[in-house]
Length: 280
Image 1 (cartoon, rainbow, N blue to C red):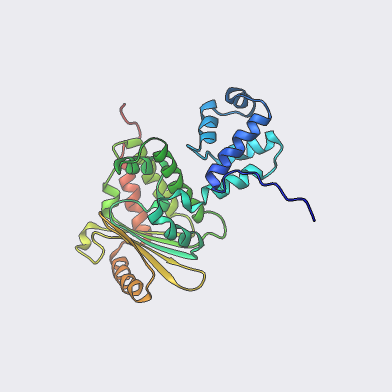
Image 2: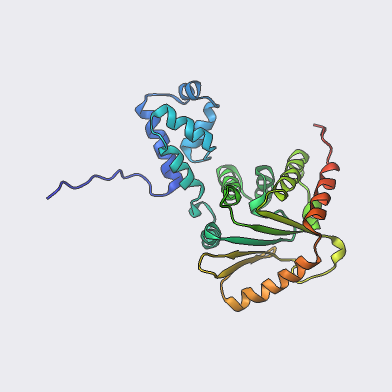
């Protein structure tokens, strides 16, 4: 009978496992955070946050640590699993996030804020803080939200169409630098081949999604699901008849929107109105 295989006893949750592996490898090499920073680069506080799970950092950091520790691809793979782990999202969103990860095409209507897939870290931080998140929870939620953008990157990225109420472009941030960065990011994303942005101008009047944001996901099995939310609640819709009715409403709203070229020009005009040199 073969000997029983030992298990590590470490966490099965990707984010925690990444932090545990980082702590273990540094301990094996007998390094302090400051010594590690001197060898690999970056600030010692970053490595402290990585090892506490407060942040995941960037893939470049994971690659640099892989190279230093002689673990080719291990830490980068753990980082990728942690970034894509649905458990980092609040429980009520996890099923939706699992669907989003496998979507072959996506459509969104944004009533008052940029879609989560198109938010910068600065925008996400201010928005989440306004909702009550703070400290370690805030940083984790910012990373979780901005990490979703990986879905739209690469040659195999699914097509994404978003209709933004013009209110999105006027509901700026208190941090004007962060707001300028957000508008610039929208303009940059609008020029990607798999992303189509429309702006629904104020003059369009009242419509079926006036107070409702909605995302439609086309899945591998041919089904379409939707997530709709307003100021007080959100709901994942999987029943075909309900999704179909909501999609007809979305199509009617999209028909009222500006063309992608006109929408990009409006975003750029809004960007020009935010001063380049902002007072401190």
